[in-house]
Image (tube, rainbow, N blue to C red; front, side, top):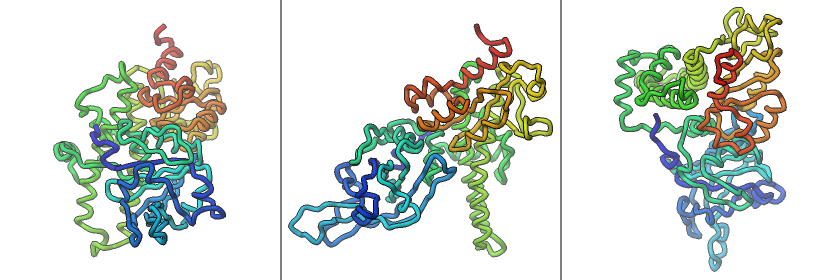
Length: 420
């Protein structure tokens, strides 16, 4: 399990909704953000005198619910006294940002967050009001009652669980801190897998389940099991990945060790492996939980394991032959999509099993926006979310969500093996 905290990466955070003066080129103060001093940012950014400007590297991000990935730009921002030419007046510190492909998307009314990182850089995230990323960042930093003036966020408001960790990484924030005990785990992993290449996902997932220091019974606590297995596997994967990447860096890239194209291709392969592996691990851990409960199911993908138009649902209960049997009762058929994060991809699930009116999608994503969940509900899709994640949703959303344990009970009831 990860033992790091939000405060290991962030020094301070503030958020607000943008006003026209912050974002509108026709009425803005030339790309300036004011009001950060009242949110405590003078402590983090300093107090330049009349002849000084403090510059910070900044990662600027714009993220909408419709985008599968955010727009990200690396830039430099300037912290300065906008009254520097008026020596008799008290200082008024503002953050100046240049126009670029991300800042040009800023719109009055957008949610806007500024964070000072431990590495002395800034993270600036902007998103439409009411978006999922806004909901998630508000949960992460304990932000409430956002207005058009900055309010200060809290460090360590919540535990940095895997869903929030993945959210931060989608924003370009690396949240993998080397911890005491990592070297012990690395030696165990090298002993098990050789230390030269990645093992099959199925083997790595099995190792993660079996090596959890405090085992979780998937029959009694399926929600806890899926969260802890995924969290533990992610930690082990990052430890092993760090070892393999270091080995590659020592060897270099290409024949002379300095081939830029080879380096770029390797970097992309690392990122792609992270994304694909976490999804496959999620599906394999879910399969193990269902098998532990004695539930009949089949996975889509193999020849003959598809529905209409060759659609391949992640999980079909009890199976594809029953689904194709038009005499088989539709109220005993269930389909479950599995996505660690939903984004706009949840729509893919809607066409994967026409015989099933209410479809289910299991996810680890926290604090999905109310707009998104309302659209899911109206489209005949219901979210399955581990119980520990329900507190990141609003009360009305939480009443609509079902836990993994509740979904399992639905299947058992349909099979006639559930509790009364």
